[in-house]
Image 1 (cartoon, rainbow, N blue to C red):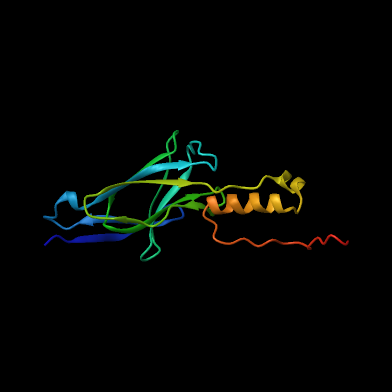
Image 2 (cartoon, rainbow, N blue to C red):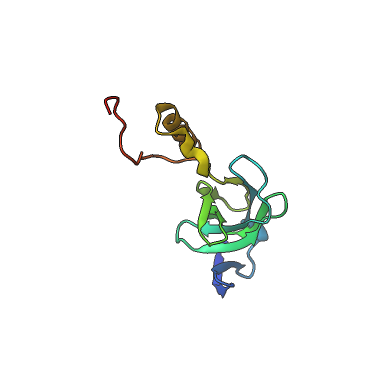
Length: 159
């Protein structure tokens, strides 16, 4: 029987994370690797961005790191379980996250985390038309948004 023990909490600069530790005699191949790329909303490389690995079972941040110049990241020595990778903004807000990643013992898993589409400030030029609403809804669906709400006064043909 192989057992894993998640070590004590270590205080980071502003984040606490759990460092997995193996019990003596545990084989090293029971831990997993989560690697991947962080991308901009247009599919470009998101270099030097802060990404963090979160255990979805308990909500704990396991590890935080910066992507390299090409947007690549690697989380090594990950316990089997369910995780998400989050891209963080400079104001410490979550900008994007992967779907839930189910990692089994000894598995190397690849993931892509992509920033969502953002409507530029000049997008109001399109106005409240059916084609512009359709374009926004299409982009929202492509970015994983499940629902949208139109805000503002309705425009009727008689006014």
